Picture 1 (cartoon, rainbow, N blue to C red):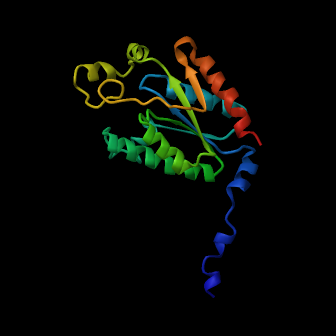
Picture 2 (picture 1 turned 180 degrees about the vertical axis):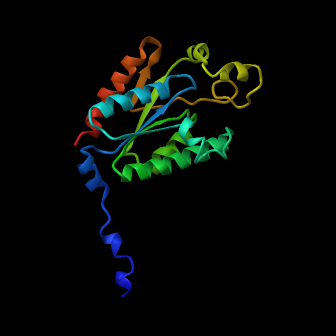
Picture 3 (picture 1 turned 180 degrees about the horizontal axis):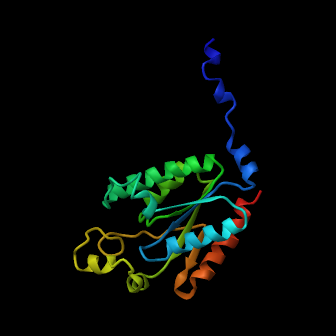
Length: 198
């Protein structure tokens, strides 16, 4: 009798079943870089390009995680670490569903990104470093965050009074200073195609 308590678990679809159904390999593309580097804009552009090619994608960024699952977290290094831990666990669930995740987070330290990679699994984690110099990020400053940080109104802001540790060996590095957004999107799209194709 005990063997029949949860027979559904013998019938659950596997990640492989779902990937075959979606005709794609699930991966997490982890975009890291300073605030204003273009991470989210590039991720959204890649999403549209992949979607137009028939892929099934989910973008995760501060806008859709800090208003819900992580709305109780601040921006201390400890809260940032917990933010990334939760996002990584959510990403794992998407992977099991066969979905390609485009994650756009400052994730400023090597330790935080190593945690994400460990939770998600190194075989499924593709780190993309959106390498945009600080002065360009400050020029963009669409939300006025750098100006507030320089004025002391925001404490612990990455790149001003909190460190950003650049990836040591990213899977892809985008040098955006001399590259348009469209060129960056195309570079990521071309890079990831072979990783997600069945």
